[in-house]
Image (tube, helix red, strand yellow):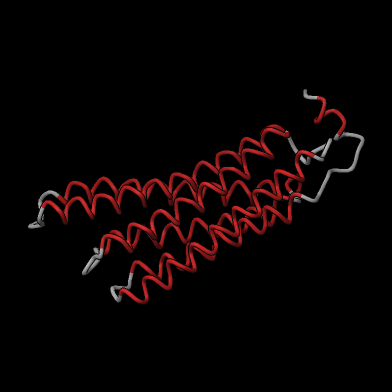
Length: 215
C-alpha cells in the first residue's frame, strides 16, 4: 500500500480534481458531437467551421490539462493513486487530440461522399464520449457507484470492439471497390484515425477499471 493510500483512510479526499476531469469530459463530448456532424458534411465552408469548433475544444482541453498539472504539483494527498490521477488526465487529453486528428483528416482529404461504415464509427466515438462523461461525473462517488462505472466502462469496451470489426471489414472492402489509389489512401487514413480515436476511449475505461480495482 502506498503512503498516499494509507493516509486516505484518515484524511478527507482532495476533491479539486473532479471539476477538472468534468471539464475535460465536457470538451470531449462536445468535440465528438461536432465530429459526427462533420462526417456527414461535404460543404467546405461548413467543414471548416466545424473544424474550428473542434480545435477550440482541443485547445480548451489543453488549458485544463495545464491547470491540472499545477494543481497536482501543489497537492500532497490525491483522491486516488497520484500516478493514476495524472495518467487519467493525460489519456483524456489524448482522446480529445485524436478527435481533432480525425476532424483534420475529414477536412483535408476532401471526401465527396463518406461510406456508412465510417459514419457509424464516428457515431460510436460520440457514444463512447457520452459514456465517458457519465463515468467522470460518477468518479467522485466511485466507492458507491463502482458498479455503474464498471457498466459504463464495459459499454465503451463494446463500442471499441464494434469499431474494430468495422475497421477490419472496411479495409477488406476498400481494396475491392473501384477506387483510385489516391481515394484508397484517403479513406484508409480516415478509417485508421477513427480506429485510433476509439482505442483512446477504451484505454480510459481500462484505466478507470484499474483505479477501481485498487480501492
